[in-house]
Length: 205
Image (cartoon, rainbow, N blue to C red):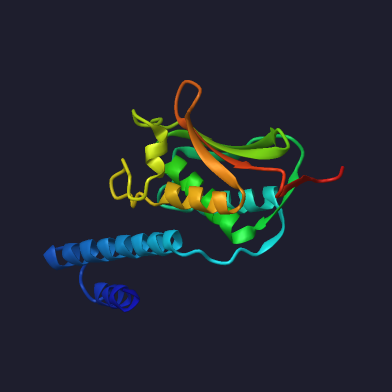
């Protein structure tokens, strides 16, 4: 697929953008990029990569992922992505890339459901562990059992792969945690990543 997309990009530069050939080339390029994204998600879902555990600053990872998703096409111009002040900073003994992937998928899922308003991220103590909460002011959860949204290929979004939440849950469980979905307070929805005390420690003051 990489050579196909690369060849299309080269050809597109030689074809005037207006007119039928240019329009067809734009459609081919868009669909090829969509397929490339789907295959990347599918490979992430299907592979059980070896986890590399290390001490990771949650604040650093979360802010880096927010900076990345705000440049993503899913982020509408009228949507703000914010970190809310929560309890004191935390360090997790966790696989950094797995945590990044979970946060990226939860943030993108929230952004795709929010056309105006904001997406917020906060983390708080929950028993002996911690909860990372991604909340949005979007359309809220569809009717029915929220657990069905974690099923592979289940999606209510045009062009969605239905793998983002499946990947987030699978990785979170491998990290010793879980992801749940809830309706928001009044509007929108919340995705909660729960990490237990086996991988989270409070940073000394």
